[in-house]
Length: 107
Image (cartoon, rainbow, N blue to C red):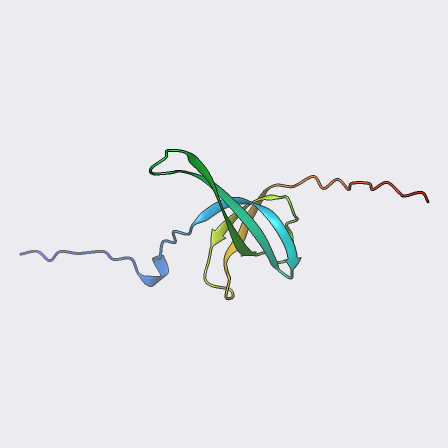
């Protein structure tokens, strides 16, 4: 009877399936960390109304490259800190941060 060869992936051939989300940067007040809001629509099981659900993720941003309002893609990674388990994969669209001029008060 011939021997059956089975191929199993070794530890160096791991295939990574990380979660990827697209969201908007809402805060960058921390060093090397941004807060990204990911929105999704989900249909209510009983009332059949679509609900907009939001989730905030703390994301590792080495070098503070993203700014508030940017559309970004984030990817799951190993835990970096207690609340950070995502890293910035790419910046899809930069926000146009036009400064709003405040009228000077004349007294």
